Image 1 (cartoon, rainbow, N blue to C red):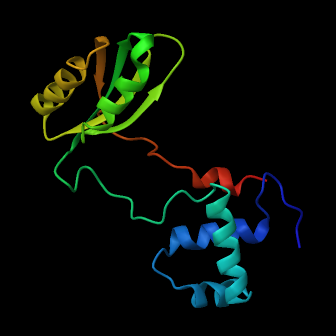
Image 2 (image 1 turned 120 degrees about the vertical axis):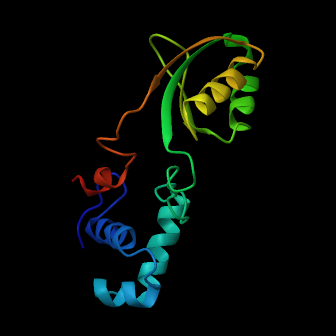
Amino acid sequence: MAVRKHGLDDLDRRLLHLIRERPRTGLLEIARLLGVARGTVSARLDRMVADGVITDFGPNLSPRALGYPVQAFTTLEVEQVSRADISAALEAIPEVLEAHIVTGPGDVWCRVAGRDHEHIQEVIDRALAIPGVRRSSTVITLSTVVGHRVHPLAALE
């Protein structure tokens, strides 16, 4: 068996690749394709979930297919003392897909989705209404060159 590097060995990487490429495949079939016992697959998945490598098994959803074809990135300048309240308020806005505390210009970067440009403005207005948010700067996404992904990191040795 290969030596683990960063908590993953070759079997883990092959398992992750397989469930990414064929997410509806059952454990028995995965075991057969990998040439290992079903219990091995189950134990590996359980370990990767417990270690936080696998964060969910849910489907990836398309904002565009759900009726939200416009995406934007908005930078919020916030009062530092109210960061926890601001985080909770941003999480309550369904159109906020991600929010990250950052260094450099601005304090919080958000990726938001909307039905159209006016809807994006409404989302930004809701963010600006949060106590502690001082101002925003927003750019509209024209196209996606590389979408959100993590799997290539698991393939690195």
